[in-house]
Image (tube, rainbow, N blue to C red; front, side):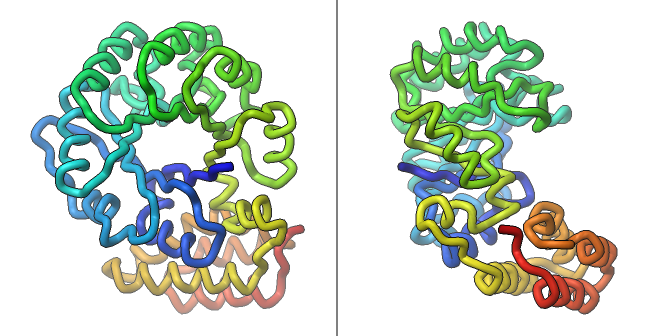
Length: 313
């Protein structure tokens, strides 16, 4: 079995990945938040941090690229290979954000199958490296999936990571497992399942329905409960003490890396928008964390939550 950490903009950056790798069950692959490829654009300092081997020691990290232009993808992938030693890159065809899809990128690229076909033909013919794809099953209609499958099966995709929702679903409702089943029965390439893995029970439901699936990508469920994969693979919940160590490690790293309390608080509050629900009776503590304007107030609220509440079983 293989486990992957999904790329989540503003959350699963190199600081988060390093702390997670230290305290919880290691992932087989960690995917970076997307790098937006543009003509003649060099990597920013933040992007260099995301892909630099020195910042990701001991982890298999896959840079994710967002673009609908083949030349930009090829140039960025070559840079990542030649300058940073990456042998695999990932194409983002899954982001459902309106600001991304309006530009025909992410899941928005799926609305133009002929253009996507030509794009894939060019990048696979010109790049000598592993190219994986993270995809949704369409934009507005699940019926789009048949056309997309016909395109995907033409290319030597290293791995197809499938989030079985259409773009307009965003993250609402349940994944369309019939679409994933269609991919399993039709495609010969390695597949990875992604979507609504929030608990061991969720994981078991997918493995029971798709016993040949041996690769899983975790996103919101893992951020909500960083111990999720440890529970699935090791059979034990790491517990509140480990979560506190993980939290404190993140906080100290952000305090060293970022300038000013406001930026540190922004990062930590984003995490608590997911993690708070992992605690019993979390509501009043979450409100205090969200309203805190200074690190002293924030740390007091977090300490009260850890001292007075338990992790949900």
